[in-house]
Image (cartoon, rainbow, N blue to C red; front, top):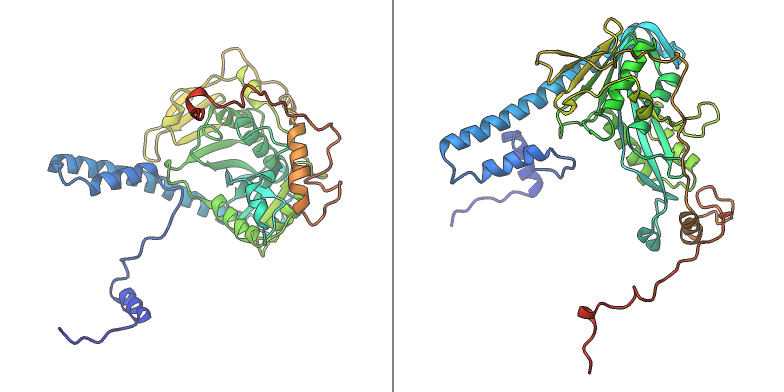
Length: 404
């Protein structure tokens, strides 16, 4: 047996980093690209395949990565340009909420975060883990030039779903109250068909162009599975603060957002805010009378529209692809007055069963156990009675115990 001197674990790691810094231990990760994972699995188990099949599989994987890299580089370039223009025009001194007043381009990114529950305590008692406290959705719109993100906190009693109407309504509120007044906007969104990449979102962009709210708008998306961007970074800052925070009301949830960034880069926005209240509109039905559906919308990653070509959307599959013009304006249709908005969607609120659940099951775990607690108030409606059908409680014959 050779007599080699043993080194400690810390010394081994130090030597490893010095000699092979390109070889790392894989870290846990979430939200991975399913296509990449499938390619990696198939390639690692391709021992019985022919060389031609291996080459085909590797070429497809390389092509997928090239497309993802191409879209990522475009996003970074637009972010850098937006930051340069933000500093050049000194937009920190600009009043927020102006519409189409600055001759420049700004980029905005938006996405949903995973919903949270409150009341929430940094030191959580055991029984609360098995219950369902009050829910709160978080939707963020990030101004890439400023490095700021507005957090829309939507209580479960105020929500109308997570579909296109909600996303467009929140985005519309952002432009009306938090925008910088740019004439040209680039909107980066997650590659999710139900929430963002849909006809309602494209029609909304065209509506803003044709009503004079923007001169040009471009929607840009990254390759599905490779969509990590600025909103996720801001959400991450907040979630780190949230783990160590205690909040029993929606105002305290908003305060945790405000305290999650030292320089005020995370800005909370409540739906029932006194200065900037948020309304949800039925944009989908409103646009049906004026615009046609964009065919094969899932194939494209770039959508551009401008006042020079009203009603025409210029689409591209990827950054290097050829651009194609598609007219989505219905013949003989004219948009209504500039100030005309869709009908307002009224949230349904919490049903009686949910209200009493929060009051009976969640309120006892709060520091404030009064009947007026905002998150778990005492319901004014009568407590619903649960009717149990005795026939449905009987065990099926096949599971009945055998007779003795």
